[in-house]
Length: 98
Image (cartoon, helix red, strand yellow):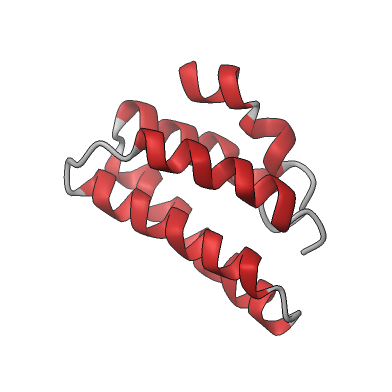
């Protein structure tokens, strides 16, 4: 898979218990444009961004919200793979302690 192979989504998201189980959903959403995976990933990202906010990790929260937006746009048949790749890299830096 392009996204998981190049950007190692597993290792990026595995650093956080709130994000680690989302990898398959995010990859399936972005690469296969699977609507059900997108919706489930958005729901889980919503919980993660609320948790980040409760810990005062506002940069992490903002990037999680950005990824949510990319997944929603994917549901609407917009190509957001490039944007999501960048955001995932930033999430790996900013959200490893939530």
